[in-house]
Image 1 (cartoon, one colour):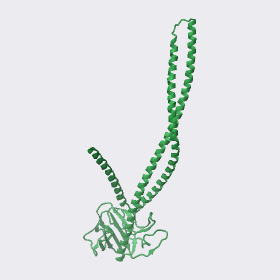
Image 2: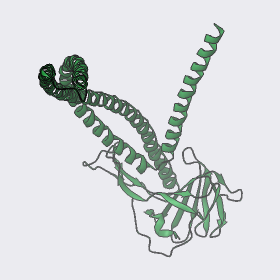
Image 3: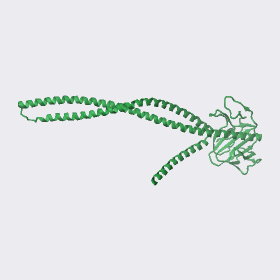
Image 4: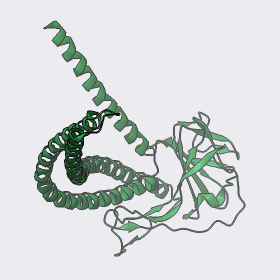
Length: 380
């Protein structure tokens, strides 16, 4: 009883460990998806939809083939039983023929030994020779006939075996088709599960993006850095909320300056894009710069005056710097603001504003117009 209990605990522990490993892998996958760009997530979802269509098509094709094969297999299974039975009977006959052939060969050999060499010829010996020769002819004739029958039955067995092998190959093919079908169905279930998870992540990211943009837009409007643009309706695309809110944009024509981070990659670009999942028209008023180092310093790209420096609900800590020529630079998603940075303080070009762990949201405006931040900073 104790041994049974220990075995049960061991099996239970293995199953629990297997489930835990599955959960850990799924959590790792979700975390990886959370760290992806919005565009990459959209690509994953679109690719997933295409995979689901392909899988559904393959399942349909395999189901049709399996149905057709089943009818053939049912018929051939009966044929297989008959052929196996026939072959058993033929093999028995073949075995009997082999024994007869061996017996005939032995008899023929014994006749050759019946008259020794140097046997004296006489009337009696001539009669014996004649009898033995006649017996030898009979045996040879019987041997020939038996050999022919043996050859025929061997060919028949070979033919039957060929049919058996063919039917067995069809049966194995049918089993493989069923196995592939089950595998595809499981793959479809896993793909649907991933799609649901990706869509939940995507919807949240999309919603968060909208909320962050609205919060920053309102902050800039309150500071009179930008003005509220008129709402525009576009019937060709689905709208985010009641209408798509466009942005006033102008091209920057001044000199390039330093970047706010020393080492980074551009995670999100500036400008319009159509969301491929819901066909929503969006506008990125900022760029997202992903720091290549953790806890990186964020620097003011130009000399200017701090007009805003505090924590917000959705954008974490935000610093806004006013520069000459009605230019403003906005640094959002800061993890820390430098203790020396206060509203009203003048800062130099390259002065540290704060620190960021991963992503920095960087936005630029001039005379209430948005500017592509990558036109202002050097990417070298």
